[in-house]
Length: 332
Image (tube, rainbow, N blue to C red; front, side):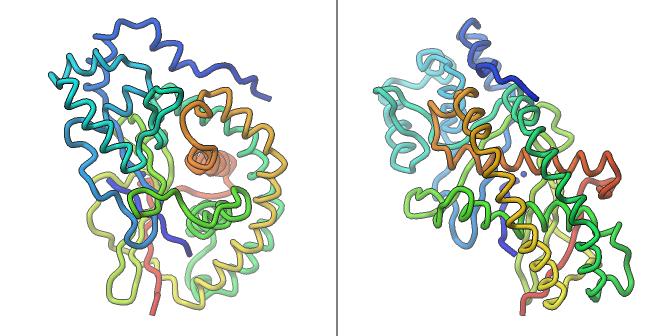
């Protein structure tokens, strides 16, 4: 299992609506709106690979969002009261951390940022690929259940209880994310940032009752030779994990085999949709801002989230009412 740490999480494409919308707004209104909205910070990382600076200090995270939304720097300066010298200091720090870069002399975020409008569109654009995934999961479901039936878990519990974890997290997320990076993106290492390697995102959460755009993800803590994990989209505010859902070493091996068996199917789906994926990358405007790898790894979260919701709707899996599944993995 590959860990993901989270701080806290036929369609015709058009140009990114958020960018056009912001260009006709009054800059003062844009800046005021920016400071009133709620944003979530998330990362994809393993080990000791985390930001080593306070990204919310001096509203540096909001500065990046302002750049992403084409809010004028003068408007940002007026809102914060920052001098030009201060703005230059912020730019230099963010550039050193590889959170900011320059395109044709203009500062751009180097991390993934999604406003509410953009996130909803990304979920919409994910639908064709997500439906492909759901079709293949259904085709493999009988074999997946057979493998599950060889587990210690299956001696006392039904597949239905574990279906959310297995068909979403095992097939598509934690047990699979490294394979997506290595075999679809062809990357062996995550982006280097100040000597660390991680992907980072800032996403608007307009609803606040669940994580941004309902994206499913993992939160975990390692202690006493075990990994205490929670998978879902309702993890905000949870600081401790308690669970009777125990995955032994032998059962984890079975789950790993399930993920490995599905890997070539998933990679084939992504490869078949490669032209469409790059079309989305270009036409949403992200190609003018961040690398393809940075874009796709976060959009992939929208893709498997949409697939998970479709499987829930058609009763292929059952999402717990809380939106979360807590579990413990034996590591030693």
